[in-house]
Length: 237
Length: 112
Image: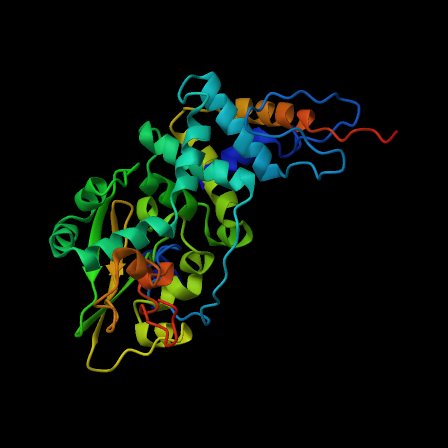
């Protein structure tokens, strides 16, 4: 809080008010990541201006490279649940891969061609007849981003974070998931360095499926553990 | 437990187990600046300038009042500013000056 106060005091509270938009000042395009504003576009908000200013100062001080943010945005854009879906389908299809995945999630994913851009460990939790896994980050929003991309909003919001560890069955019911009472529910709480991914149960009736057909059944929410993977009756597969 | 004792035992981010509303399955698409903010967090972590855990604590130290009023990425960028000041990587006056400069670039065109 001390720093927040100092920031506000020295920044722009009384003597140095928040930057204003001067209509007579001409537009200079210095920000390689921003598009020139459309004539009727709303000007960027206070926090967007803060983001641009911090990034540019860090580049000017040569603490980060000028292209690094752009490259990392491309990395973030390349991460979607489609990667996790492939991992799950491979694990269902290939028992040896499944063993390696459960032994060390990160190493097995890297072997599968999914790079980890951060210093996180990945623990893959296998759902069985007796155990149903659910992942959460009670403190903030830690998530297996290298394999699933960014988390959904509800994963970051208070209701899920607060309740998943205390009343997981009630939370699952809100996703339409009813877990039988004789199945144990294990909730794993992520940290900044340890992330989890749920390996859902392979649905019955998929014994003859190809890896691609299996992949088509897997969803993001199943890899968080809030829903099972189901084989829809009348499925075209 | 008194209210202050409750605060000491459970910092603002530590909400696991508290009563809360039903889960509403919302999702949204990040605005371009929010995605840049996310990428900035990753890049700061790669360079060991600011770690994910420092960011989390930085958000927590904003206090629950401010946390409740800011959006997810607004909290991040304000936490980054405070932590970078704390580490003397950036200084408040230079950020204020740079923000003024950035704002000036986006001046509204005078109507013809």
